[in-house]
Image (cartoon, rainbow, N blue to C red):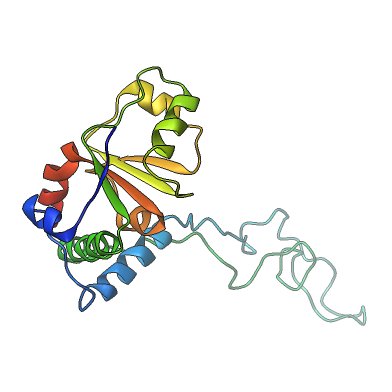
Length: 202
């Protein structure tokens, strides 16, 4: 499996559009923040006095006890009572428009290609489906600790061989995102993915 460095000239020849370091940094920031926000569950929750267990019975009479007046035991001042202004489930989702996504992808692709982090191969497959063969195939192409392999698609045996290798991520060209490209120390780009990447950056 022969690999060669992917240059900006080669990207232009494959109709994969990129931008330089003079623009797109804010788009990359916005998109990464959106990815991280969209992973938040927003499930933090506290119970109000109307939700905690208990009844509405007054805990003792209004006057004559020497204590402050109180109502039911579900009041926030009581142990085991409700919480005032506590966290409630909420949605942290952020939306990023297509133009910003496209610009961010162009910027990141330009940066990693200019930084010699991308190599191309005609094909990538592990026919025997073994993890050992998968590691050998990746090691033959790069010695980076964090590797991203991008192809048009992967066969089941290749997915089976690579699913337990945490340092290597297999992604299709249609699904790979900016955060994954930034995280990778080396990107192995299969030539069959050029057309899809070109359409995403057009």
